[in-house]
Image 1: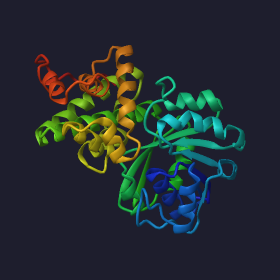
Image 2: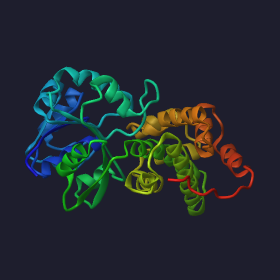
Image 3: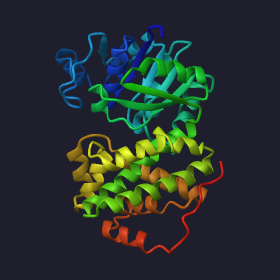
Image 4: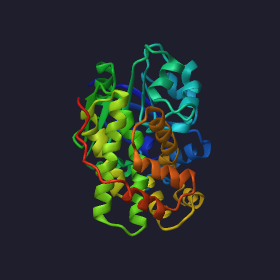
Length: 338
């Protein structure tokens, strides 16, 4: 495709990996970070030593801490900031957007303001006519940065927007698939972090493959029920943004949500683990948000309920597991109708 101008907002591990991928595909790419010292180190060292040590930034990747410069330069603005900073970032970039700019995000979670989907925040701040897309899927940043084979979903209700973004990132080792289901894609990205904490807790308690497999499977059933109630497509949760991302984050210790859960299962305190991991653990806030949503919609999500009890009601993880196992015997319900 023709060379595009894109900025990635957020110089953490995932934002940096996406910027590297776009630059490797020979697109004009700017990576913005809010911390001036961190950005200065990126410029001088040409590597993100904190998040992606050993990965050299391409020569055509520009790094800046000036938000106006990054946004005004770009035809596509992609947010890779934590969910708690999502709305604030939208507000900051609003005055600098070009008339035909597209907005995309790789943020996984719900709005911290009101628990709504992030595309609602985009519409609220930037209007409903702006082209928008979400990028999601089973992708650890270090593996993408190392050029290992990976695949993602790019969802947009405007197919041309998804196709344009897919073209920027698609390569022989980084496959992009497009979708029109922005609801299901966002549900998959938000809920998988809750289940990753659950899987980590089970492993931290000393349980093993059988338990982990059961948690993933029954966790997927919870996600499907919520997705059905909110109008997402069932097929999405059988794909990269659903089952793919769920398996990844529940089974590999590169997942900081899983590592957080392992620590909880081993008896460590949440605040100590947050300090130890020293990166955003999106599943903590997502647990409260998804729990609240499930109650509002009367959707049965027992695993999410117990993770909520552990994180927000100080329930002992062993007691939470016993509560799950003590649930009444039932049929394994069929999938909701499509």
